[in-house]
Amino acid sequence: MPRSPFYDQAETRGRDEREAALFAALPAQIARAQSTRAFAETLRGVAPADIADRAALARLPVLRKSDLMVRQRADPPFAGANAVAMAELARVFHSPGPMYVPQPARVDFARMARALFAAGLRAGDLVHVSFAFHFTPGGWMMDGGARALGCPVFPAGTGNTELQAQTIAELRPRGYAGTPSFLKIVLEKGKEMKFDHSSLACALVSGEAFAPSLQQAIKELGVDAYQCYATADAGLIAYESPAREGMVLDEELIVEIVRPGTGDSVPEGEVGEVVITSLAPEYPLIRLGTGDLSAILSGPSPCGRTNARIKGWMGRADQTTKVKGMFVHPHQVAEVLRRHDGIVRGRLVVGQVDGADVMTLRCETFGAGAALADALRASIQAVCKLKGEVELVAPGTLPNDGKVIDDLRTYC
Image (tube, rainbow, N blue to C red; front, side, top):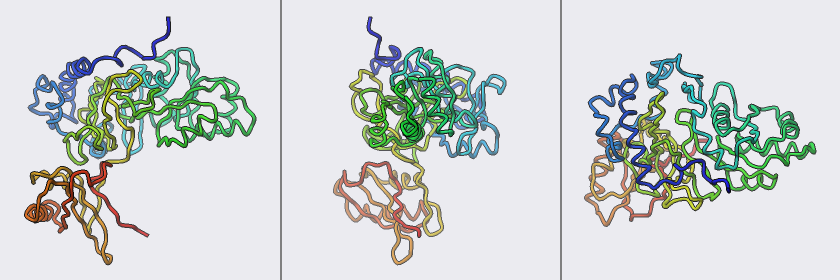
């Protein structure tokens, strides 16, 4: 019998079946979170059984990763977000931020097996892992996923380019997991040194942008590389499939796209901040704002996987800036917009005129006039404690790039 192109049956479930399974598991996760110091106050009074769909979940507050980092410094190591004791963990990581992340004592704790499978890895394939195995979780994430697939791992880690090129030639791995730029460097070094890297057929890459030009360069060196999007705290969020049309969401996360600075969901196709709710019992993260931008693509993937897809990583959502010595935050812009009906979308543009900071709120509206502009100016003054101009434009005028604050000033 031919082997299935899918990791498991969950990947081809109907949308309603998937939603039912995720939200059947969510109340127990809400209850776990309520038992932690990190969520006890923000979830106080919430009845877990009432959080039964996306609309109910969207009423809960967003915990932004930047806030969790601040909390960790005051309440180390995890700000009380862990639902199990330190003795029940396998490892603790120090992730860039800085941020401490617990690793549960489960083999595929980051759920990477699904992404590795989609990239072409199968049981018995040796995987060369060049993510770091110290401080940060990248190497261990891939190690756990590979072992769950039945794949042995060579834990190469970072650096030692010539030695890594030599090792690939001698161990003959079929797969690679690491950053795409380092894969290209190693393959080029192997070519320069006349090593045989023909065994290396597929790769799962992450950790940095994977431009089409880099993908093509790696393919010309003999390796078919696919990307995934993951974070240290949430594990796998989305992964590329052979269709190469966006990135399919992982089956064990609830993912929302919200307007930066708010907890409000954006329409399908609009760029916003990725917010995840994890079902991992050891680390119950409820509506964690990753700070990353992306957008939901319409329709299922041509590869046959039925979960929603995102465009991939599209930048950072934290657009806080300083104007005339005062911080202006995305949530303040959102509050100004929320106070007025008839606004489709808005963006605060910050620039300089004759060396002085100026800001203009550009708003998409349907035929509104001077009265709305005057009211918006008053709201800017009230919320931001700064004066700002207002420009009303037609719907569809503003770029769909997730920006709430666009700082056009140059510093030289």
